[in-house]
Each structure stands twice: as C-alpha cells, then as structure tokens.
Image 1 (spheres, helix red, strand yellow):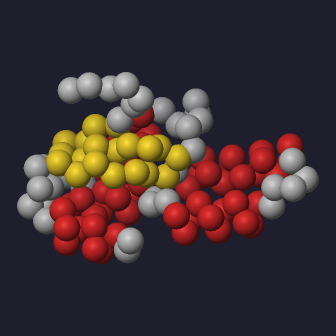
Image 2: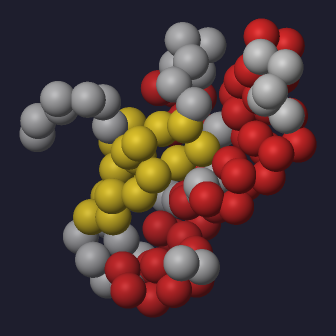
Amino acid sequence: MPLEAVAQMAKGADVLVHEAMSIPATQQMAHELARANPQANYERVMHHMLADHSPVAEVGRIAQEAGVKTLVLSHLTPVLPATPPERWRAAAARYFKGEIIVGQDLMVA
C-alpha cells in the first residue's frame, strides 16, 4: 500500500503503529548476507526490502501528514544491535513532531 494511502487512513488518529526500515542497517545486512551466502544477491535483497518496507524517515513524514499524536515504530527491519532506539527515533523525528515510541517485542503500555 502506498504510504500516502496510509496517511489518508490514519488522518486524525491518536496513534499510528507502523513498520519501519533503516536503510543504512539494511544495506549492511544485505552486504553481510551476500558475503556469507553465495545464493544471496545484494541487489535482490535490497530490491525486496525497499519494495516491501518503509524507510523510517518516510514513516515520520506520513505520521506528520496524517496529524497523529503518537507514532509507534514496530517490526523494525533489520534488527541489528548497531541500531539503538535513539537512532530510530531521531530518523522519524526529522519529519514527525509528536511522541515517538520505538516498539519492542513483548512491550506493553
């Protein structure tokens, strides 16, 4: 679904829960996969990730456009120790000025 459609559906919502992808971490992961597995192709992995996942800064832009109060980043891709919650939050905050929660497995409010 195009991100603009998500913004329309989320218009005025209190909370938007959205998956998010870190492009630098995804590039790192794709390079590591390609080195470790000859069957893995960097370009194919990146094409899939860019086609099927949303860059975190774009998620922030969509949340701002929709006018939501709180953005919850979920299903973070890829999960790398090198990508701390502050980095996810900062990327979304480039565009979104509301509350940002970086979701974690088994998290409860």
